[in-house]
Structures are given as structure tokens and as C-alpha cells.
Amino acid sequence: MPSSQPSFRLAFLCLILASAAHAQQPAAQPTPHPPDYPGVRVFIPGVFVTPVPGAPFSGTVEILSRQFMPDGSTLTRRTINHIARNSAGVIHNERRRLQVPNSEDEPTLVSEHIFDPTTRLSTFLNPETRIARQMMLPKPPEAPENSTPETALAPENAKNLQTRDLGTQTVAGLILKGTRKQRTVPADRSGTGEEVTITDDYWYSEDLKIYLVLKHNDPRTGEQIVGIVNSERKEPDPKLFQIPVGYKVADETPVK
Image (cartoon, rainbow, N blue to C red; front, side, top):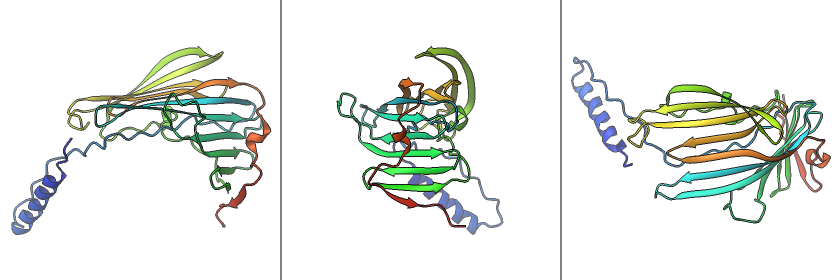
């Protein structure tokens, strides 16, 4: 969609000059101008593992992204994350690069995160630099944007927020409770000339205290699906919560 910012800036400049030349006359208000649609911009948060004790498990998260590109094509990519939580509530999460769906290689590991709710010690592992960045947090980490209904981002200029109960369904022996959030962006604000409805579905497991399935759909950018494809409800491997041999530890806790 062509940008009309230059003409808007010119009109705004003319308005300022006219106001200065005719100070005795009330200044006219500029016509509201919708922001330019930014195009494809997608954030995929993955699954947030709540650091609660008494519910050990481990699982594999699969993330599928279908992005609508400006040239009309669809870019499809996927990745996986391994997550875990032990009986003490210590969590392990990770982030891997997106890759083409038919790749047989495991996606490249970008970072790992370990958090101990008892000590509030947060550790980020960088496999490329072999550095473990540690910090004592003042409070437990919060769920990232769009990973829960409470953190759902309302797109700019969105209106008519609706929350709907999707009921329950059973997946891999777990009862999941569904919540749908929909926001409407008016045609004159969507950047497409048409009304756009953004839909986010969240499926929560009370037993595991996490959202097992997240679905995001925006007709302008595409669809993202995040889901745990397998899980084991037993004590995970202790190595998942330890700093690997060969890592240099960097204490980044602020000095009081």
C-alpha cells in the first residue's frame, strides 16, 4: 500500500504556517490519518512454562508459521523447542531457529533458559558463545506477549474485543480448557481497505499449569500454531537444569 506520509507532513506544515500567519483565527484540526500498515511482522512466543512445584513434566513444542508475504506468496516454516519442569518447579525452556518444514535436521539451538523459583536465579545459556548469563530476579518471570489470554496484544486501532469460552477438549490424556480472543480492525485502519478480524485461541491444561496449544490468525500476516506434540509426566533429566560443562558464568545481578 503506497505511503501517504509525505503529503500528510506537507499538509501539516501548511497548517502550522497558516496558523502563524493568522494568529487571530482559530487553527483548523488536521484530519486523523491512519498509520501505514507495517506489513509482515510476526512474533511467536512459544510455550511459557510456569515455575510451579509438584507438577514435573517434559515435552516437545512444535511451532508452525505460515506468513503471507507482500508478493502474494506464503512462507511456511517450523521449529521445535524442548521444555521441562522438575518437582521443585525449576523450569527449562529454549528457542530454536525457524526452518523449512521438510528439513530432517533438528533446528539450530539459539538459547536456553533455566529458572529456579526458590532462589529466583535466572540463567540464559548461549550455545554459540558458551556463556551462561545469570541474574537474581526480584520476582518470577512473566509470560511473554501473546502466550496467554491475559498477555494478548491488541493490534493498533483494534476495536470490539470479544472473549469466548471454547469449552474443553482432551489431548494426549490431558483436559484442555479453551479461550478465544477476537479483535476487529476497521477497514480505514487495517491498511488493507477491508475490515480485519484477528483471532487468538488458547488451550490451557490445569494439570500442567501451562497453555498447551496457541493459535494466532491475522489475515494480513498469516497463521501461527504452537503446540506440545508430546509430553511425559515424570521427573525430567536433571541435566536440563544444570549449566553444561565448558560454559563461562557471568553474574549480571545489579549491585545494590
